[in-house]
Image 1 (cartoon, one colour):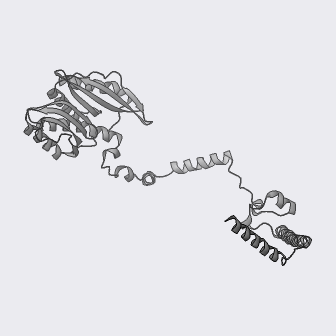
Image 2 (tube, one colour):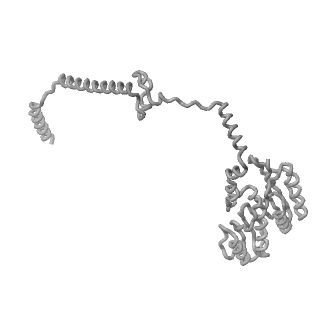
Image 3 (cartoon, one colour):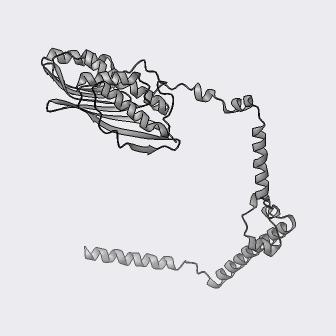
Length: 329
């Protein structure tokens, strides 16, 4: 095997030697001279183009399409000017001129007839804008809604729940969310309540699937209907806060409900008005509480109840209410 390889190598060397006799030998000096002449020709063309462009820009200026492309140092060197150099920024109005303009606008405004001003502000954009959802209601409209929604839901629960159902927890939050927990003596009573809740709710859900279950657990959105959004028409003035709180206390006491927590409100500033929120509690029984809330919803008191949490602690009903009032600065 090795012998055969040596023979192949010898034959290859022999063939290469024959080819090398016919190779053309290049003169390196001639190649360098030709490349140098080509390089000088290219440089001459570039220099001529540069000089021609410079002469054109010097005579005619920089075209608008090329304005900003060439550096200012180059344009200054050849004596050319860009279009932007010929433009001067307009001077702004002085302080005195601005003051005069504002004064003229104020005088023209004061001289406008009332009818023109009314047409300009387009009051229909404020009063004819139909608001169909709670999120779009104005602040006072939300209070009006809250004032009616809670007693409506508790009234429904009081009249629709079978007598053998007891609730351990009932939560209601504006605009219409509710959560219930309790127990029924019979599965049929549980089914009755679930069916009635479904009929007046949206997005009703219950985690209890067994038909034989007596446990009550449900949540959803109660359909609040026939709510007058103008029940509260005015903000409470700062000097009316104490009187409004006293009116609420008096109304509650008259209906056998004692409210605790009306002394220290949580105040939030919204610029035009402030929201006073009172987190109050009461141990009144359900009948007295419901009666008070129904009377409250018909009263002129400018407050709303966005949240209520009713729980049975030991043998007593403990109710936590969030009561809100909007106070104008």
